[in-house]
Length: 205
Image 1 (tube, helix red, strand yellow):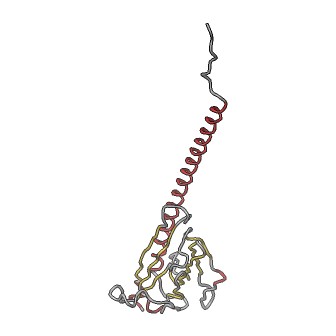
Image 2 (cartoon, one colour):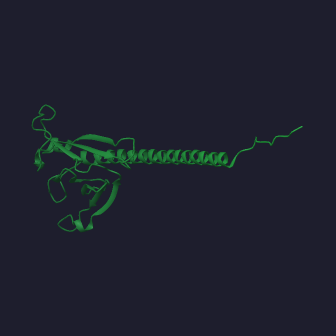
Image 3 (tube, helix red, strand yellow):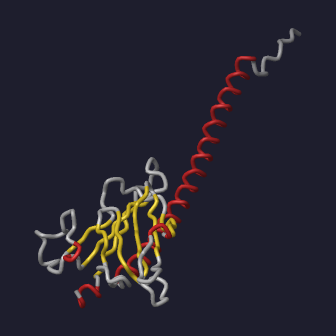
């Protein structure tokens, strides 16, 4: 009886093709896992940044709402800019009125505090203490601060006020921050905003 060779094994070409296919599957699966982990990390960082921005808006609102004249008699608002505001408020309840400065520095929203000193009292800006209040702010050229007069919201023609701002006309301030830890990734940039009525200006000025 003639015996035929057993050809049931894999040829070299079949083995190479199998290895190639498995390599592709491995690379695709690995990239999928890595991308998934990166997205999860980004979402977590984005959520943390949004929480930080919300906390900043809450504190800013409270300090702006309670602004008063400076201890040296200066008007409550020193500067009203689109990405910077300087005003006076007792932020630490020590019966002294601090000079408060909020400003956007690249993607960091910063807070500067200057305490009054000397006799007569002055605000030496060389003693200003600056801290980062909120990170990953992507406003670029968009205003952080908008200003409104006492006739808002009835007056929509004269509001928001045009720059340069007439400080004595301001009665309400809107804050808007665009938060995103990495604008090249989804989800989209989150806009957070709030409006603060300046109660002490409304009553006393």
